[in-house]
Length: 329
Image (cartoon, rainbow, N blue to C red; front, side):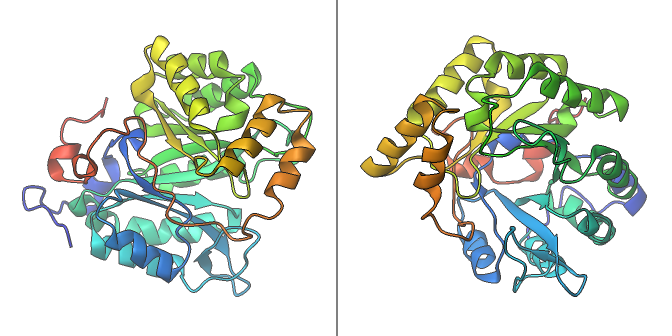
């Protein structure tokens, strides 16, 4: 257990009032770590600095680690958290896929706050809290007015990760100004500082919306954006990542973005991805065909260095020094 002697365990009340502010964009992630085997493999990999996992409710009413459409798992939330705290060396991102799972998980998390603080482990609480492109009428996965106050009350030490609920098929090609404004409004309404929030955006829905997202970063100072590829989605080309990085670098915001994406590795993937990206709207059915034979369960081990791929993994290991003087404004 990586307890840092220079960071003594504090009283729980003090822990609950304080936050760590590591940059999500500086981590090397393992994605959708929803089984004991995947979690063990992730924690055995010294390059991994942050673990993301999805949470649903089991048929028995217990929070478990699984990504829809899966409904079962060999890993409960309590087992996941206990294992990660015992390891003590990775930050955590909890992606809530069911509203019913939020409160019971937060109650457990709050009881372990002192241990997380002593280890130097940050926790991001993630949910799709507002509707986005092609999902306007479906409702948010977990509405902001239910998710945010509960998190602030039970786990004020945690950081936020907000996403838009989106759909892969539909007439909309990109995030809108209204989408960005809604995120700004939420931060203002609930008093969320930019250093406490990461916005999660679909990389393909972002390529035509970069001015919108640049404004979002500027209007919520010190916030971050994490670009992602979704379950069943074709990997993206490195050219897409370079294009986004160049645009954000030109805006002086490169240090505030990251990528949790699958990159094309084969000639076939490059060709399929190119077809999809040539005309996002017109090719949405082609995209479905390209993705239909992909695995039905989310894959672990999508270890993408975020923002600066040249950084040594060791530089991102959570240590006391990494948290002192971070962006706690």
